[in-house]
Image (cartoon, rainbow, N blue to C red; front, side):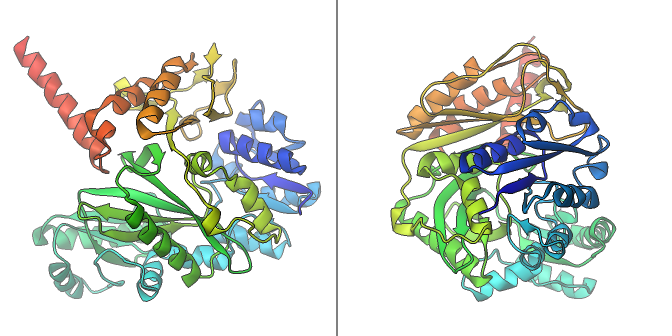
Amino acid sequence: MFSKILIANRGEIAVRIIRACREMGISTVAVYSQADKNALHVNMADESYCIGGPQVADSYLNMAAILEVAVVSGAQAIHPGYGLLSENAKFVSLCEKCNIEFIGPSSAMIERLGDKDEARKTMKAAGVPVTPGSDVIDDLDEAREKAKEIGFPLLVKARSGGGGRGIRRVNCIEEFDNAFLSAKAEAQSAFGDGAVYMERFLTPVKHIEMQLLCDKYGNVVCLGERECSVQRKNQKLIEESPSPAITPDLRKQMMAAAVKAARAVNYENAGTVEFLLDQDKNFYFMEMNTRLQVEHPVTEMVVGIDIVQWQIRIASGARLTVTQDRVYMHGNAIECRINAEDCAHNFRPSCGTLGFIHVPGGPCVRFDTAIYQDYTVPPYYDSMIGKLIVQARSRELAIRKMKMALSELTINGVEHNRDLHIDILSDPEFVAGTYTTGFMAERQERLEHQKDHNSEKD
């Protein structure tokens, strides 16, 4: 087992990892930017080192600086958290060359699964259902004919990268040429790789993901699903487990497909297989995330397994002692992402010094955060300042408990989206569990229509 781990991240996830290490008796090393000198993770870690300016490119993405701290501090491993360098194959390769264990899969694995076209081919060959589509196509005329065969609407998608870049929705053949060429150009500019492929655009769908743990000895365990369909501009807002749309039989099928996906690439460490689920209960592989997910706590709450600690154990060479027949989902868990943003003004980020803070408590209520009174929320980073998670015996009780916890949560000094979460949890479509990935956009349209209707009446 490692005796010292460097956390190459910030905010709530850095705090989360430090707590896991403390429970395991492992010393921690924090890195931080000049803007984060008073951050909670800096004070909680056993050692802390400033690695650059406020911008992420100068600090949290500064590979050389992070590795230098790892060497100087004597850290044996690096935990990347999520985002930032967590899926950067180059950084993982540098860790390997420096003989520092990266807590996650190998650079070759990240590279292989980061190539979406290659991942599609691999999963298809392994018998995992994939969305109808094409392999990489370079020729416009050939692509146009293939598009007609796939059918519309469809997506032209970049083979490399992420973040929504190099993706174009095409509703009809008349839109195809421009969309295909602009997707290629954007992909080339953003990722240095202009290769694109096509997929049928499925709608309405649910976004379902399966959490995996895989050790170095071929043991694979699936910890069940998370429902992640409440999204705004492709960013998740609320996650829950289990999904209200999944029957026991469908869960068994999807878990088996996720395990098959992991075995197809000899995956190691924690990973998440993401699926799209259509109205006919057909599911399709979307991608595999080679890192810890933001929403991992909902799985931890229902299965009672610390995923971060298992990431560390697996990276150190330990065998999984959790077996599939001993994985049980107890009750229902819901997570709300608390973002510092002004919902009334197009969700613009909100920064400033925090005043009074009150965090809800009680049985099975958890708030993962790095904020504290008098902490200044900086303008340089992601707007998420915390994750509120609850667990209860049933979904109905979990919704009720989350609404109670949200109403009790108090954060003064910045605008945040607490009230939006309360409204979503009260929406009949959410309560029924029938919501899809289009839920937030459709909800916004309804609200705007109602606002216009009320204005006309006035």
